[in-house]
Length: 266
Image 1 (cartoon, rainbow, N blue to C red):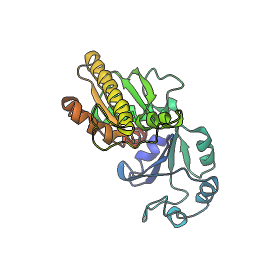
Image 2: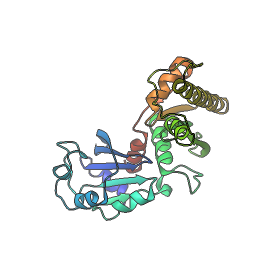
Image 3: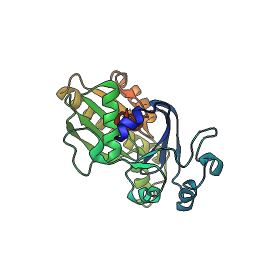
Image 4: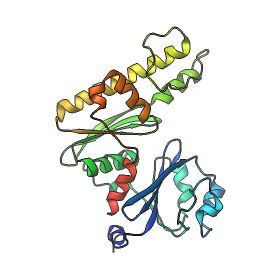
């Protein structure tokens, strides 16, 4: 019996989804098909991961990593996807782990180096809202990933995300400071260095997103667009200020990767 059939036969099974991202760990608690809770943590040290595999109740060991009252033990199924190989290695000895591979995601035409986070998010979005689908992931890197009505990969693009662009300016120049992202769209023409950095990065990035979106709708007039990631809310706020008609059509959903995981097994 395959994993998918096993999961369907145990609709009340508690299971964990873990996405190892470029900056953090992203967790989901499911009971069968139902998403109960999601949370993020920093990477766990190797000794903590080792201890987690030996304790009968995970949150008793590390309540800062696992919400209170989660009914997990070290034998609970853990479905893991990762874009950080040296983090993946830490979890390989965890009991009852299922490490998800790119070839398990039923998107046609996937190339071997496509990030599994992008593939799962695209599959999850398409399964929930239909294809054609373009997914924008506003994380450390900002990515575009699209598939057509036949679930065939159209392709995508990768560029530095908002935070990465600002931090790179600060780290690779002599006098530019570290700058935080504002909650609301800044003025376009700034009269100080901090706001000039914010303006330059935000306006050019948002204009680039708009261009990709318009090109997508030109090629796929019925295509949908979903957006997720750590900077998702900020970008949507900026889009609402500059391009409200476009922003109104975006599907804002942080759990696309976990919907993709769920769709593999149910």
